[in-house]
Image (cartoon, rainbow, N blue to C red; front, side):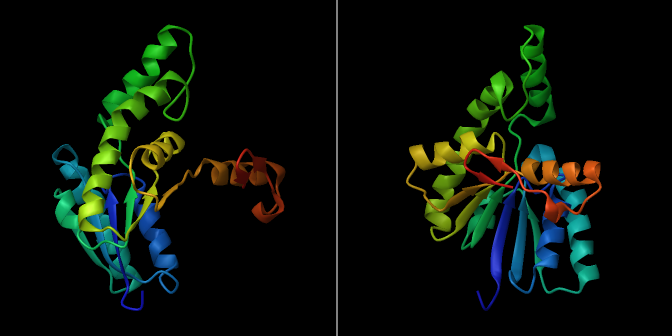
Length: 202
């Protein structure tokens, strides 16, 4: 850790990447990132270049010695990574539209984390995540996998049940957003809001 860590973000062209980079900048003292690799697929190359360019400018403005790499080669990026984050959408936004519109035709509401739409997305996404895990077993066996990809709970549980990989954390920003929204509606500081849900607090 003293030399800094290598982080690989699969789905690096995502609109979530700038927020992620902002977090790395703010926490650089406790999490000294040495290399950040942003990975995407050929269909996402243009977005990767736009978002990656923004990430580089943010880090330059912060004056931090973080090397940002943009690549379409996942295996090249994964070599000796310390952390791997996933924030990908298999099938892109076109698939999401179908996921949500098809159930609506039958009067069923849902989105990418629950209901039929969540199941559709899970069925497309889990095989891809398991392929990523296979690459990690070979190329960065000591890394932690931090999964932001929805349906986050389903994907994380699939890795734990159907692979040998146990160093995984599944995350979702919805509880934090709910907390901030409630605080805003009540006109109080977010620290005063405490919530409980099955499996934890927010």
